[in-house]
Every structure is written in structure tokens, then in C-alpha cells.
Image (cartoon, rainbow, N blue to C red; front, side, top):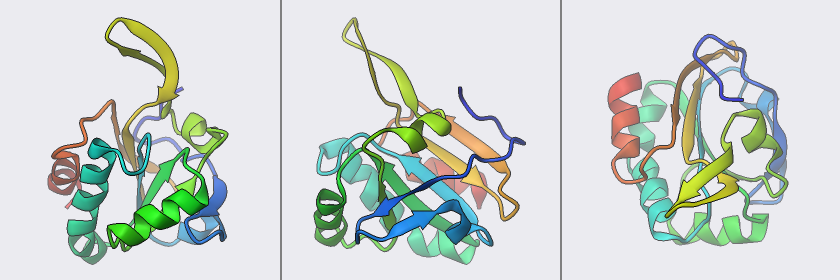
Length: 152
């Protein structure tokens, strides 16, 4: 089920790239951009992460925290975080519970083949936990720039 603007964002909890348990409560008093990506170190996911990194200051000035969510294990996320000097948290979601709750896990089609997988998506959430904007099935390249133009 996909989220829509105006809905309450589902609560979430997981383990970040440092092996620390995190939850939606940790972000309760700030605007949040949660972006969902399929796999660390792949070309599209690296491009997207670096684009969010390069706009981190602008989003922060506007009051937004950024969190990346993927099915990767925390140790892989730690390497990805460190290699690309990412200034935001990456959350491991190996059972797809967070992605499913946010509508970012589901049926995908690629070259005529259908399969379940992570749908590259970003969800904007305000300080009251209300979804303010959603972007599903996005292209990695230029996505952070489109988000920046939309929310800032």
C-alpha cells in the first residue's frame, strides 16, 4: 500500500550503519526525508546517495534530516557510508518491514519479468509525523535535485 500526502507516517525501527537501533521516535521533532534504495555500491544507488550528500547542507538548513533505507546489512551500509562520506544515517531493512510499511516494497517489472523488490522511493515527513510528499518509482540520477526543488 502506497502512502499519500496527508497520511500519518508509519512508525519504524531498525539498525543503522553503526549497528545502533534507531526508530521513528529519534526523528520526531524534525522534518524527515526517507529515501529507499535497492543496494549499496551499485551505480544508481551510489549516484543517489552522493546527490543527497551533496545537498545535505541545503536540506538541513531547511530543517530536514535525511535517512537512507535499504535491505543491505549494517556492515555493508557502514562501508558504503564511510567510502562516500555520507553525513546521514543508513538503516538496514533486510526483512523489508520498513519498505513495506512505506509502500516501497512490491511488484516490479524489468525487461518483461515480474518480481518482488525494493521500489526506489522517497517520503517526506513533517515534524508531526505526517507525510507531506511522496515519490515512487523514481530514477536515481537527478532525484535529489527534484526533491530539493520540491521541498525547499
